[in-house]
Structures are given as C-alpha cells and as structure tokens.
Length: 326
Image (cartoon, rainbow, N blue to C red; front, side, top):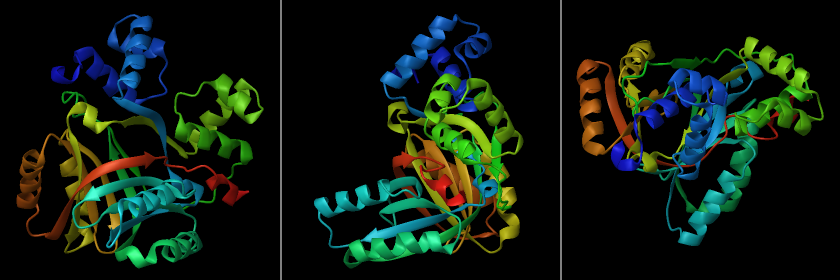
C-alpha cells in the first residue's frame, strides 16, 4: 500500500479501527506502541485523505424486531438527470440502510430496513409511481442473515473477525433514549459520551450505562469503518450465487471468510441464495478467488452473477427507524 500513501503503521491502525472504531486514542496507542498524539494525527490524516469515510456501528437489527430486504433494479430509457433523481430518491429514503450503483446485470442495489411487509410496500408503491416508466427489472430478496469479515486486505496478516447477524427476531425492551443512542452511533461510532449526552439531553454516566446494556442485549454490534475503497486502489465486487440447496451455505461462507479479501456474506431468499463481497485490485484477482470457490463447491453452485459496487451510503440503522417502536 506504499504507493497509496500508507505505511505499516497506517495499515495496522486501520486494522485496529475496523475491529473497534470507538477505541480511544490511548487504547490504540497501546496496541500500536506509539504515542497517543501520533495516533490522533494519523487518524485525522486518514480521514482528511478520504481513506476513512466514516466510523459506523453495525446493528443486530433482528433484535430490534427488524430485518433487511435486498433490492436490485435495472432501468431503461433514462437520462443523466433522471438517473440522478433516482439516486437522490433512494439515498434520502428513511428506510434505506445500504445503497450502491452497480456494474453487471443490474444498475442499483440497496437494502431496506423493515419491520414487516408494510414497510416494503410503503417504499415500492411511491417509488413505482415516481419512476415506474423507467424500471425494466426488479428483484426483491429477503435477507435471513448477514456475515461481516473485518477488513484485512490492507493488513493481510491480521486475524479474522467473523461477525454474524442472524435472523432470530426479537421485540426489544428499550425506550426512546436507547433508540436515540443507536441512531447516533450508527452514524458516528466515535461520538463521545459527552456529545451523546448533549444530543439526548441526558448524563454521561447514563449514556455509558445504556451503551453497555445495549451491547449485553446484543443489539449494538461492532464499531467498524466505512472506507473509501478507491483510495486503497481496490474495487469492491459482489458475487451473487444460486445454489442447489441452502445446506451448503455455511461451508461456503466459512471457506470464503479465510480469504483476506473477503468483506461480507449475505444469505438471501429469492433469485439468489448467497452473496459474497471482496475487495480486490482487479477482475483478474477476483476471477482467481471465484474459480477457487467454484472448484471447491462445483456440485452445489448452479449459477452466479458478478457486480462491481460503487457505494453511495451506509447507515445500518437509518434515522427515524426507532420511531416505529415508540
């Protein structure tokens, strides 16, 4: 990564921040064995140079009694102005948790956080009324589970942290303050206790206690990085597989997770059964990984589609979702 302005210390720092982006400068300094002010300077520089877009928090949304729908869209007869209008509409929608343009079979891919079919309906009907004449194809998949692998492509000797967010839906026993904390940390994992207290008109000791309880309830997930893949000279690919049966999915996920270029796996119900995401330098590198997986599981894979992802936004718990529970 030297050609991209990153030395070994930067790469180790990025690795540690993706394990816990809420870690204090002091904690990071201890792990890297450098001065706290050096850590502060390097983190600030990584943000300024757009290696890091944001510090975010993942959520076990199933323990908030909510889940994701995954939507693919292919459009036709659009203009650049219409394309931008579509992007803005999706990006600003209160239920969209992840949004990317794609190269491949479809043009756009995004996730809608939902409590029930009604949430999906409330997106689909207005969206089709606004842009239905441009929609060529639409695919809707339900996501039973999500697997995140910590970013290791910039520090391949780092250990794997495989985090799974399962389907098991639970009605949470939390209040409006908890939801305010969840929404704030989803957008900024490094927000201080003091700033959280000011935002929620509360006390720092109360915020600290609430965060601890949310972690104990496994509602708050990991504090991680939202990174600019272009800055690292890599492209983000998603490969969606159709499989003969779901029984092989866990084996494929665990096998793919061992590759330091793997970043995500999502289990889906619908057109595809499994999606794997990789951060690689080019399609040739992806092809090598993909050929290895296909050879290993040739009896189970019936088809696949490859997409290049260009992320627009990530917020695993979009603002306003807590209001559904109050």
